[in-house]
Amino acid sequence: MSLAVTALLVGHGLLHLIGFANAFGLTRGSAPTLDVSRVGGLAWLVAALALVAAGVAFTAKVPLWWMVAVAAVVLSQALLLTSWSEARFGTLANVLILLVVIFSVAWDAPWSLRGEYRSAHGEAFADDAVVPTLPPDADVLTESELEALPDMVAEYVRRSGAVGRPPPTSFEASWTGRIRAGPDEPWMPFAARQFNVIDGSARYFLMRARRAQLPVDVLHVFLESAASMRVRLLSLVPLVTVSGPELHRAETVTFLNDLALLAPGALADPSITWEVVDEAAARAHYSVGRDTITVELRFDPAGNLTNFLSDDRGMLQDDGSGFVDRPWSTPVLAYRTFGSSRAVSKGEGRWNVDGNEYVYIELELTELIVR
Image (cartoon, rainbow, N blue to C red; front, side):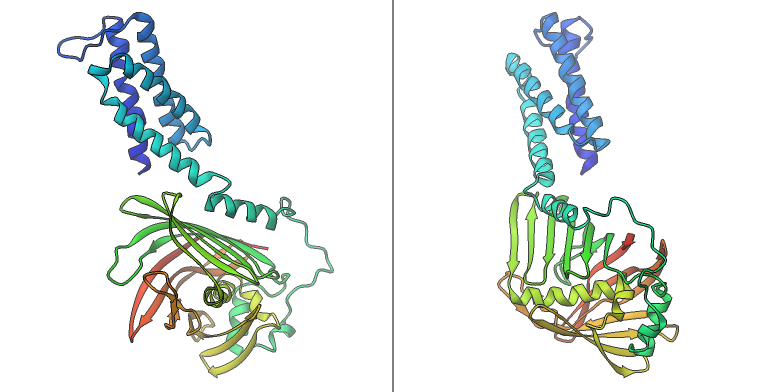
């Protein structure tokens, strides 16, 4: 998609050189001819350079590329009107460029899903511009605090590198992967960012996926008292808007899943109560607001978390009207060290529908910052 936009801007710009060439007698053979004065020819050259510059700025991700593009389109359209019979089809390119600008601005505007995420992130981490040096008497997670955990959970926390460090209070993560709406639906590639504030039980998860080459934006917001999920096509067209107690319960499961996969040190928090299932599994009970959920964590003999399962994460129905109870799991495929933290680097999300399990999301963690 990005390559197509660049090609549109640059290609449209190069076509404007025909007006410049006509004005200065540089055309030969069967090249298109326009009745253009030399002053007009210079204007066609400026439009060409502006469109190419907008294409280069778009490729380089210059934030204000769209301003150059709008100015170029205005000039281009004015020139097309002076040679309407020969150059009128260039209007189509200008319309397409304006649509790209509208959707690009919509993705980045303060009222967009991305803008909401950025604002919430700024409020959550306003005081974290400089990471403070850990004082000698700082509270850190100790072996004695792991004694209340089932053995396999304690070993998993140790392997994460959390012992001897302050208990995590928040984290940020970046993901890539693919997702689908059902077992027979097409896969959609995506990139996502999230941040969680553990003590405040807050989670923001922003995803941009692509379906049929069109961008689909998704924002999950989970707070102690509320949860919402919104999906927009082209950053503007609402597709799904969901909130309410059923979603909050489901997102409570997701929040605990994040802690287990990305910040294992938080599993030692006394607010999580545990019971042993067998030597390879433990059950956790966790409450946020009015919701108390139960999950099961499974481990291999080396102390690695291999799966996270719950029946408390409802599945959104196809028409978006409500949730149905379905077993949910997130098998772990790989681990990696991010800074001083060892965390899951690859995983899946699975739904079990009437005994038939299918993968609906595949993720790879590309960045993790634990505070």
